[in-house]
Length: 430
Figure 1 (cartoon, rainbow, N blue to C red):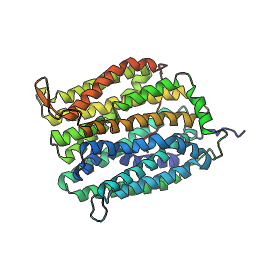
Figure 2 (spheres, helix red, strand yellow):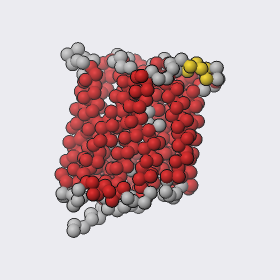
Figure 3 (tube, rainbow, N blue to C red):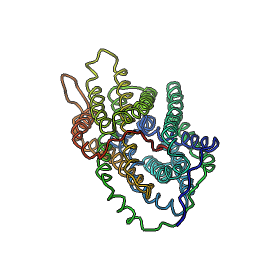
Figure 4 (cartoon, rainbow, N blue to C red):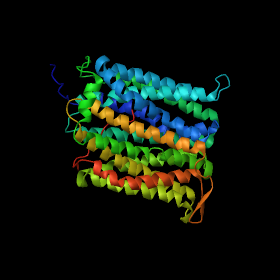
């Protein structure tokens, strides 16, 4: 039986390549959540229900493919599958630049193929990213390194989209979106150079047992499946909130595209603060109490947007508070989830255990977009209703539904088996 690779000290070149790979890939990940692609699809005359479904497609693809690609990564090599995934992601973003161009019709087909290709590539990259880095990062430095990793790529993304917002303010034409998408596609291909330099310490080998046999062992871990179920439900009722914010701000509040992107940047800025504060909260009070705080935090943030007419400030200020607050709460919740899952998983089948959890998280997030998109499409919610004297939209109705379900899900905190004292990080968004 081969020896388990001993973690090696992280040298400067390896650290730089990991950070650069994550930054160049993470900025395209942000485009799906910060209002940029929402504004682009809106300019292409997509309906709200179509936009919600399209933006959920990458997560739905990951839901289906992350585990199979993780299994194949152990067989054919993590870097081989990862590099192939970056090709798919880059091609998908490049294909989106042709959406709406006359020779490439129908537009919806181009958009669907491009987004699905991006999702396939992301599933390939995410399926083995943690397993690739795990032997390179010692346990003593894991929290600091992955904290730095997450803060770096999100800070880089905020800086990039501040420039994008300034571009859209001055040049709001559709061609500006295509230029930005082209740059994101270029980033996706350039990061392959840096990814190739990351050493793969664990050599590929055929799996010792079938995927289903390994999965059955993971599912039987004490407290593992109930916690994964909790994460699925939490993502189901929160993941679509940023897109619902964007649709409400675009179609109801009549904000401009550059304002949408800036509000998306505020959400990421809130997340940067939430990662730091959330990590400290997990260390001091444990994950259960952080989750409890996040449930009430989600409720306050969502209800604040619904009560926007009652605040004596411009509505964009309220939207800014909501975006920042949501990013903060979501980030704190993310730290608690990753801390808990790293406590629960065993030393063996670590990649499969984290992959199954990420699969359920992606499934809940993707189904969230599809569910709310279908609710919009069938018109089950009124587009003009009154609450406390305020006239609200169908997007407000969905946010009220999400906030109510999150508060009701507080009772599911009993599914969380432990109270963790040390915050952990899983690298995401590559």
